[in-house]
Image (cartoon, rainbow, N blue to C red; front, side):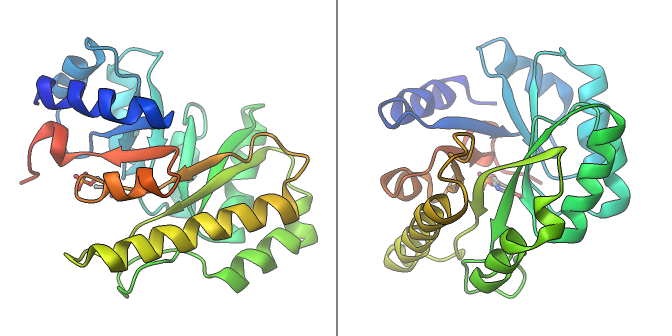
Length: 221
Ligand SMILES: *Cc1c(COP(=O)(O)O)cnc(C)c1O
């Protein structure tokens, strides 16, 4: 864990009003405690089980964000405590989250993950799937989830022009959906984009949440 680098990033994002999600996947609880003692409260994990184990071991005022692909059969583990799910990519998953949120008398905030990259391996909805989801009566009947915004991952490339194009398209989509579907919903305000390699470009294009792991914790083995 690199406390100096952490403080630099916090300072760097402050003028943008964005929030840092410290991506702690694969890191031991001691790394998280170290950053917690410097004031960090939002941590991102990509596996439901790992996040649940860490939730149980660590202070209860941590906000746990699920940032990785979520299988419907894992929703039950995180439903009692998850603060934000960044990676919702289907109506079926949203319905499952709603069901478990209801059991715990919660409203679970979610982001819709949008496919913006040029890589087949990445998850997410495309523009027409998003519109279809948001227009459907099935979605509109869900009372225990709230869509707080969008999440996207840019292509893993050195081509900064390409990355900027992808972030810009996500921001444009965010603005359009906000107007079309959420004009009376103040909670639709989060744009989760940018990781260690490209967070500056993401901030420039309107990210409100940036997800940084290796830049703070070192490279993952
Ligand atoms: C691992 C991960 C990150 C952080 O990646 P770094 O390159 O370590 O900053 C961000 N977002 C998602 C969805 C991830 O899975």
